[in-house]
Length: 387
Image (cartoon, rainbow, N blue to C red; front, top):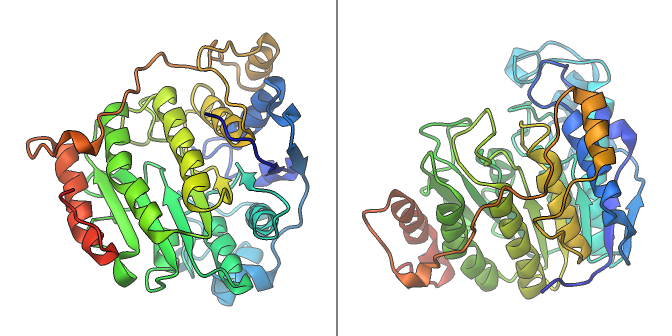
């Protein structure tokens, strides 16, 4: 059932300035179309929901995660291959520091709203830049806004923060930031590093006391397999860890139409994941939920629908899957992209979950991937990997 809560969405049109260029996969139009669709469907009109402004992250916040010399290189817009600046993934662009600091500022504002009790849930759909490292840009990410938000929470006195990353790519930058810190549980469900960037995220990367958790799924895994893997790993670990706050990254590049990866989820499967995360936030973290966007490179048919479902779920008023997309939004899409927009908020997929309790199948490659994760980390948390 939907759970009502106060919900703050942190947004500023200047977030669209995080722009590597028209030919780059991470086109900010995807976020523009998301916010437009959410507005048209009344997501921001729900009781307890507001859209708020915020300040960009200053150097004191950025240095919670990043090397000052790296920040200066970004600010100088200097070609620096050793720091990942100027590579094809991360071309230098005018205003890079200001745009990146703005993304980080939105995620810290979301963390602050939840930590202070101003809101139960808070979002930055332009965030989720989870690949950025301490001293280098990586994978379209300049500053690692989820890691900065988590580091800020720890600085405020948080003792247990859980981070769940459902992007198709491993959440390597957030894992690296807290790999030796048992106060932060990081869980990433992603395509196996054997077939996809960044080449990390094996079950054997377990961190401090098993608090780094990786589920590496084979190419082709779809809704039912993905949701089964989620059910087998995420709920039991969150219940056992009992975080004060849940931070999630909702990259939607696991969709079958995404051009950069090889999983085959539907909008409906992704929507089911958001429902599960919302329930778990209330069950395990007292409702304190900070949510971000992430990857997603099918700009019209996937990202706007997926993240509008995410925002609606967090608002406590989820959108029925068969809801038509507004004609006014479809016209906006045509004007902005020249493409035809999807007509409904669903792919029509069946997302019934075969839970882990139904039994382990060693002949199933997804079950084997799940069991590898459970065997690697469950004993560290006092859990039986076979149960």
